[in-house]
Structure formats: C-alpha cells, structure tokens
Amino acid sequence: MADVRVLDKGTAPDRFARGWHCLGLVEQFKDGKPHAVEAFGGKLVVFADSQGEVHVLDGYCRHMGGDLTQGSVKGDAVACPFHDWRWGGDGKCQGIPYARRVPLRARTQAYPTAIRNDQLLIWHDVEGSEPDHEILPPELPGLAEEYTDWTWKVVPIEGSHCRELIDNVVDMAHFYYVHFSFPTSFRNVFEGHMATQFMESKGRPDVSGGYGDAELFLKSEATYYGPSYMINWLDVDYKGFETEVILINCHIPTGPDSFTLQYGITVKKPEGLDDDTANYIAKKYADMFGGGFLQDVHIWKNKVPVANPLLCEEDGPVYQLRRWYEQFYTDAADIAPEMTDRFEFEVDTTKANEYWQAEVAENLAKKAADEGAEMAEA
Ligand code: FES
Ligand SMILES: [Fe+2]
Image (cartoon, rainbow, N blue to C red):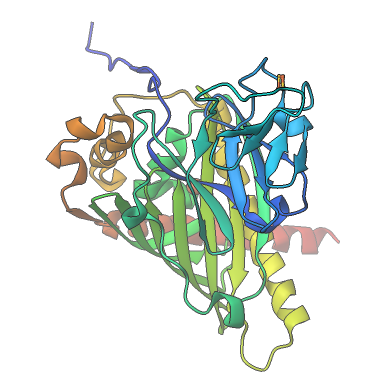
C-alpha cells in the first residue's frame, strides 16, 4: 500500500501563554461595579478604585471561595458578597469588618495592568514573573484627536485553541478562499516577541459583498505584539476613496479549547468629514472585518488541529511561525534562539495569481452568460 500521510492532531499546550492580554476597552470597567472576565481557565474580577484606577484580581475570594464579581466596590477595595472581606487592587486583604485582625499574609492573585490605546491589558505568566513593559504594544499616535471612537466587539469561541488564530499570520491562500479577497503580495517577518504579516490584496469581482468587491484595494500591515494582541494597519482604497483603518485583533484564552476573540476598529477621520459620517464609516468597516472573522470562526469550528501540516511552497512559513509562538508557552529560561531570531519570508504569489485570475475571469464569464440566458427568457 502506498504511504499515506498521517494526520497528527498533536496535543494542546499545557499552560496559557505568557504575555500581555487585552481585556477590552478600559472605560467599561469604570462604573463603580465589579466586572467578571473569563480568562486562563477561571474568572477574573475587574474593578476601579475611588481614584478611577482599574485593578484585576482572581475572581474567587481566598476566604471561602465567594465570587468577587458578584460583590461590590467599597472605597478602594472589592468586597466579597459572602462575608464582606475587602480586597485591594494590589491583592492584599484590606480589612475584615467583623474581625479584630486580618490574618497575616492574606493576599490573593493580582494581575499587573497597563493601559494602551484606551484598552486594559494584563500580564499573565505561570512562572509569576514581573511584567515586561518593554514588550507592551505601542501607543497609536494621534488616536484621541484624529481617529473615530473604537467600535469594539467580543466573540466567545468554543471548541478551538487560540493557536488556530495565530496560523492566520502566514496563511496567504485562505484569504482567497475564505475571505474572498485576492492577495497579490505577501511577506512575513518574525523577530523577538513580534510577528508581522505584510499583504496587498484586492477584492474578488466574482463574489459580492465584504472583501469581494472589485473596487476594494487593501494594503495591510499586521503585527502581533506577544501571543495575543495584534495591531493591523490598513490602507483601504474603495472606489478611489482612501481610508486609514486600524484594527485591533486580540484574544484571551478561557480554557484548553476556548477563547474570547475581541476586535476593535477605528478610522482616521477624513479631512472635511463630520464625526457622524466618520463613525458611520468605522461601523461599516467593523461590519466588514467582523464578517471576515466569522468566516475564519466557521473554519476553526469544523477543522481539527494539525501538528504536522502538509505544506506547499505557497503556504508560507507555518512551522517557523509556530516556533515563534512556542516562546510564550516555554519557561523563560528555555526560550531558544530559533523562537526569537529574526526570520523573513516572502511568498511567491506568481502561480497563485495566474491561476486565480483565470478562475475569476471564468466565473465572471459564466455569470455574464447566466444573466444573458435569464434576460433571453424574460
Ligand atoms: S468567601 Fe469571601 S468573604 Fe468569605
Ligand atoms: Fe482569516
């Protein structure tokens, strides 16, 4: 019998990634109430103190396990609904109103926080390291003045490990088949904690809606800063009307095969355009890119994980990308140079473009013929 390729589903990592994870727009946490966020196989409580500073603690009280997200904020602490123990933003127990003394070392897990681009980020590391501020994602210049408010969406995903999302960084061909866009150039650079995809693409004129618009041209640069936070700068040219769009694509792992995808869109306000119109354009793009995510989600839900993908030359550096991603699941002392060394790869899109052009032309001809036949019948 001829050799058959064995599909190795591999095993999911035994831990959650080290690095900064985004919990969403920070403003939502400032209403004086505790908020629940599912993350890292458990639940976090997020609350703002009397100064408006936002804190993140493990969601379960160290006294008897009460759910802090169902408690209340009292002064600078979150109070447990079970026996009113007060937990400060640094994780220390600030007081037990009914007790004479707080037990020594009464402390729960507090996550280091940072604010970037109006979003709340937390540092997670199973090794308990100090947060590395050097590798925070960059602040976007001019955000407050020149861009629309964020349009922000949250999509819980069950049945997939978040690493499925990461493969997208190198996957040129799926854009054509899943997103109905037509990539014309495609390049990757990995270095340190960053992985970037540079892509130019156009819409497919033989498919309607979303990316499938003949008059849509995208120039895209998308960088993961660490395991879960991507900034995607997009120059969109639609019918000659150019817009600068910034898309944040981030996620929080919630379990061994589930995560919460979040994405935000902001648009540089075109000169001479009022805010309402600019916000409307941002919403439209959010719908479009949101639709794009759902196309991926549908694929993830139905596929299996593959540890040994069988690749052709046009597939891009999948194995190198996965090695880069491994650094976040490895003890800091064991990070190998091959995970962080600079690596560049440009996919040769010549063959793909020839074939796809022909396919698009054929589909358009068929469509025209069908329409002609309908006209003749009418
Ligand atoms: S369980 Fe939280 S105060 Fe007792
Ligand atoms: Fe995709």
